[in-house]
Structures are given as structure tokens and as C-alpha cells.
Length: 180
Image (cartoon, rainbow, N blue to C red; front, top):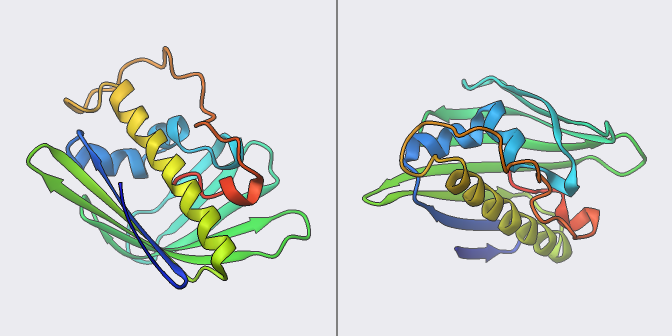
């Protein structure tokens, strides 16, 4: 994994053995997302992904304590997604607003995912989000490798996929990105 960090921006890149089309599906399709993305240890309940410019993105979690919403600014299937990334909490925590740019790059041996998160408030937030992105990308890689997605586009059964925690042992403010 390669990283770059500017004042209030995180940039990470991760190589995957899966083809770029499969990586894009894992990032955007509900069935995939529910298997690998669990910020703060929360399982996804409902996903809305209107993959077009101006389309809605929304992730609802089982606890109902928070959700992630946004709108796509740019959608280029299998190449690039740019969207707002808003964390909305039920309690008195302030809403957090970010901008994500996700690039999907095909390579001879698979693909590379490039994540850029902008508009982070301070160094502590940058560090906690960077740690959470590392965990999320590790979880995504594990999902793709364990689901049979590396060599092709076929999903295996859910056997062995019951642990969706993604290894989240961080404090909530450190784990919330969780990948995505």
C-alpha cells in the first residue's frame, strides 16, 4: 500500500489481484459491500448507489446510530468515482463532510485502487481515517481473495464469510471510515 498525506488530504493506493471490473463491483454493489465494509464494526443494512452524475449514495447500518450519505459528482464505470461523503449521527456528534475520489486502474496482473479523501479537519482526524482506510482496504482485499473474485467474476457461497468485523478494534473515531 502506498500513501501520501497532505495537510487535510489522505491518498492511499492498494494493489489487487482482481480485474478492475471486479474491483469496481466490490466497491459499488450491495452484495459485495455487505461482505467487506463494516465501519466501527457495524454491518450494512441498506445500500443506495445511483451510479450516475448527481446520483445518491447512502449506507444505512444495523444499529441505526449513524449513516453515510452523499451525491456523485462524477461517475466513470471501472475508472473513477467522485462523491461527497457525509457521516450523519443520531446523537449530538457533529456531522462530518468529506469528498472522496476513487480511481480504479487496470494492470497486467489485476488492478490498483486509489483513494483520495479531502476536507479532513485536523491531524488527529487524518490519522484516524488513514488507519481506518488501511483496515478497510485489507478487508476488501481479503473479500476478493476469499470469494473467488481474484481469478474471475464468480462469487463463491457465503461459507466462511460470517465474520464481517474486518478486524475493527479501534475507537469509533478511528474505525468509522472502514473502507470506503
